[in-house]
Image (cartoon, rainbow, N blue to C red; front, top):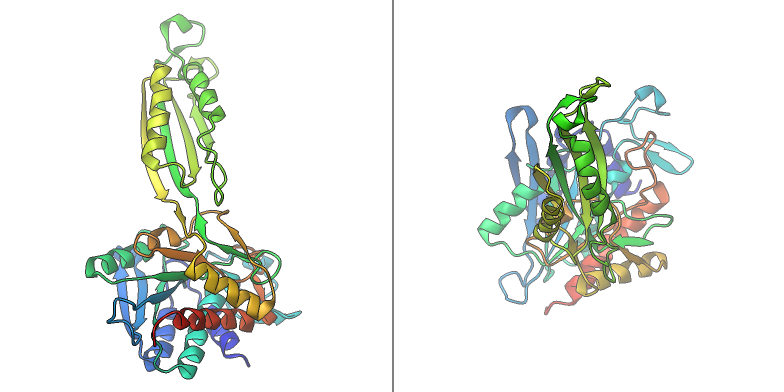
Length: 389
């Protein structure tokens, strides 16, 4: 059996729903330590939601030199809940094979990628026992959850230590129809707001004695919905603003409400900043004379890795292994790349086909597992070849 497939099955068999790692990271450390990796477990969060993180690093020959570089493989061992078990064709935590596919929760998102990381490192180090390139793995059990005690905590500690990271591959499932047809070289930022518009409650038959916040807010909301926030750029679509929830009223049909609450979200490109968008929203609301409050939550800053050493190494590895020409994309939601990009200048995401992630009967094609591992190994070879021996 393929060693990457075997390890993927071992990880899938662990019911590691966020934040319970179920010893997945211990299994990884046991594979990495004999290769010379120094493995550190970093726990964070309250006792009732304890998150575990694995930071494993193997220095290369050039690590003490200014020319030294480090490649990080990043991922998460936690998975989303299974949903109704009776709807699965087989137990989601018992790896199963049907029609050339490996089924199980986390098969695509993203235990197969993690298994491929580890076996790729094993094969690379067997062939190159003293590489110039330093190799690291950053694995968390809090990516599918709140993401406050996972990768972001490790990155903060690495920054405080002054550890240098140069390249990072996040093993998110990015392929669409064929393995390698898409990699993510960035992600949009995400920022949410909760707007409360204040009025004066009153009887609906006496509107002159009340102030209806729904009526007051509608012109401003219409203006916000029509704004072209930016034009995007070569890598990002234009920034969007969308309302997700509107609530007002007491439930009675004869009462003018006293407040209106609107939830909205920005998905924004590198052409805009969180601060700039907040200021523009404030200007619209002030111009309409609204008595209001806004609570802002920045879920993630945008990041972008333009074509260069890492993108080139990954594209070359995919082409050599599969013959597929890779498309660069920044579509989709957020990932832990948003945290890693704060301390690492080149971050991309690449992994298996994403068609079944978070779904009932999640799966990957067995025929894609070893090619995925080989691509990761080829990236190691490509980046190591860039360094002086």
